Length: 137
Image: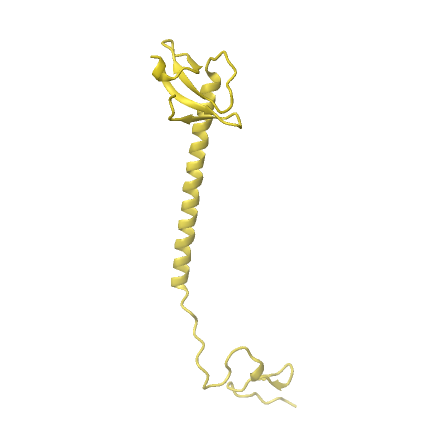
């Protein structure tokens, strides 16, 4: 006995031998609205622009932080290579100078109180890291 083929507009499940149009998650009759794909190009373009902006912003933040860290490292290298004959106190400002023979030294004397070649003023923070400051007192 051969099964007769059903027309294309009839929803018949041959595995269960039942009409299951009502169980489908999509429209199945001829009068139902046509299923059309949503245009996602605009959404994709907005998403691409957002992620590109986010990544670029994060990259610039990291780059600025890296440059700041490298400056801090160079300042600390410069101070630790300098001559000084005292133990710096945390929380105080010290001044870095250069002699005529290009030797650097750290001093408590402010630039306004001497005429040495002033390279910068530095603050020793609680982590014992030297940070450059504009204060020259």
